[in-house]
Amino acid sequence: MIFAGWSKGSYGLPCRAENDTRLALLGEHFAGAAKGFDDAVLATLGTGIGGAVMLGGKLLQSGGHKAEGLAGHLGVAWNGRVSSCGNRGCAEAEASTSLLDAVCSEREGFAKSALADTATAIDFHGLLDAADAGDASALEVVDRCVGGWSALTVTLIHAYDPKVVVFGGGAMRRHEAILPRIRDHLDWHAWAEKGSVKIVPTALGSSAALLGALHLLRGRV
Ligand SMILES: [Zn+2]
Image (cartoon, rainbow, N blue to C red; front, side):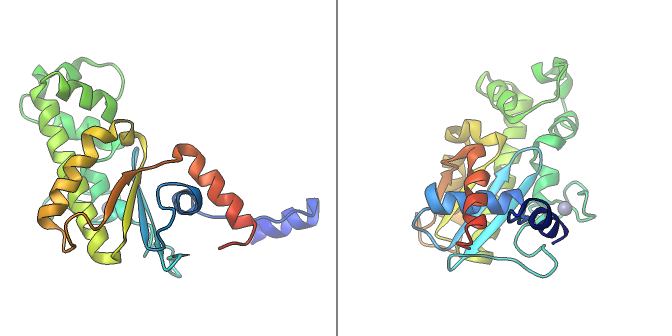
């Protein structure tokens, strides 16, 4: 509100503030992978794990701004790693880029992995490339991460009953290696008719939030 007053007073221009993941879902809803779906969830699998929820065409938002956006802090492993929020086994603590170095180094036998010799931080692109090459540690960590994302997706479906779950973030550079495995998991474990929830990568990528901001400023939401 302070920025809105400053912008109006200084430049005569409207100003609204919104979370980037929520803006991305707005953008995907108006012109991307969630177009035509009023019940939708977006999850970003990258440095952290973000989330946004739309129900009945409206972005879900609680007074404390947590109910709709804490996808990364939904538990996927009750005895997992301690998360930055204090919980144990959050999706973000188990399967996000920022924790990949730690997750990999905890694997038995990781010293023999090609990833152990890389000077830069491990990301999902490099991890999946190593798995494709048959690296045992990489295969194990990919399985662990896909398992975490799959459990997260089941929870998102059970909590919000979306018709589409859109995935963004750096891991989606290799969506063809990830999303089919999540779909297969859902077929077995989600309380939803098989194939009834679309599992898709972002259609707009990093432009989604900008497009969402446009609609926000035009007062369409
Ligand atoms: Zn957490």
